[in-house]
Amino acid sequence: MTRRSPRGHLVGGYGLAALAVLLFLAFSLALPDTFPTRANVSSILSNQSIPALLALGATVPIATGRFDLSLGYGLGLAHVLVMYLVVDAGTPWPLACLAVVAGGGLAGVLNGIVVEFARIDSLIATLGTGSIMYAVTGRLTGGGRIVPGPQGLPSSFTALFDARFLGLPLPAFYVLAAAAVLWVVLERLPFGRYLYVTGSSPRAAAVLGIPTRRYSVAAFAASGLVTGFAGVLLAAQQEVGNPSVGLDYLLPAFVGALLGSTTVRPGRANAAGTLVAVTVLAVGLAGIGQLGADFWATPLFNGGTLLLAVGLAGYAARRRLRTRAPADAPPPPVAAGSSPRPPARP
Image (cartoon, rainbow, N blue to C red; front, side):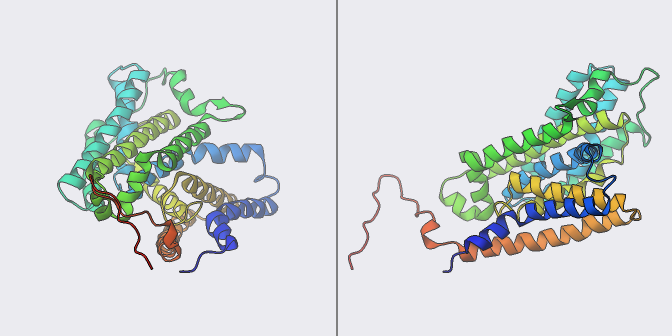
C-alpha cells in the first residue's frame, strides 16, 4: 500500500484551518472598516458559541457511528425549562441550571437506551425522541413565550452569557474548555479509543471485549449534557423562553461536526477538527452577512456546506482505510491463557 506524502498529510490535516485564515483575510480586504475589528471578532465569538457547543456535543455520538438528531429539540427544551423554573416556578437560577444540565444528560441516556437496546436506527430513534421533547416544550409554554416579569432575570444569571474575560466574551472560553476536555477524552484516554473502535468496527470491538452498548449510551449522555449546558446559555442570551428557537441550531451543529471529521484527524470525528470547522462556518457566515446577502443565503450556505462535509467525510474515511500501512494495524487479540504464536520460519 502507498503511504500519504507529508504534503498530502498537511493539506488533508490542516487545509481547513488554512481556509479559515484565507476567508478571514478575504473578508478583511473586502470589508476593511468593519470585518477585521475587535468588535466584529467579539461578536462572532459570542454569536457562534452555542452552535459550537452543539457541534462538539454532536461529535461524541458521531465518533461511535451514531447521530443525535434530538440536539435541536433538546436545546429548545433546555432553554425553555430554565426559563420556566426561574420565572414561573421561582427556582434559584443555579439550581435550575444544574437541574437542566442533569436532565440533558438523562435525556441522552434515554436516547442511547432506545438506540442500543431497542435496536432502532439512531437517526429514527433520536428524531422520535426529539419530537417528544418538542411536545414537552410546547406543553410547558402553551405554544407561547415565557417572558420574565418587570424585574427581569437575575443579572448574575444573564452574566453567564454577557460577561467578558480577558476582553473576550465568556462563552468563547466555555467552547475552548469543552473542546479541550473532549480532545483529552477522545485522544488521550481509553474511553475515547473504545468509542472510535465502536464506531469504526462494532464487530471488532465485540471481539476485543469492549461493551459497545455501554459506550454508545455514554456517548449520547455526553451529547445530552453539552446540549443542556448550551440551553442554559441560550436562556441567558435571549432572556425569553421561545419554544421554536432550538431547531435553528441543528443543521449548523451537524455541519460543524461532520466537516470537522475531515481535518486535523481526517476520517474520524475529533474535537480539534470540529473547532476548526466551526471557525470556518463562523467566519463565512459573518462575512456574507456583512456583505449584505439576502436572508436565504444563510440556509443555502449551511445546506451546501453540509453536503460538502458529508462527501468529504466519507472520502477522508475511505482514503484513511486505503492508505493505512500494514504496520499501523493493531495486532490480533490473544485469547486469555494462551501465548502468541511465534512467526513462521522462512
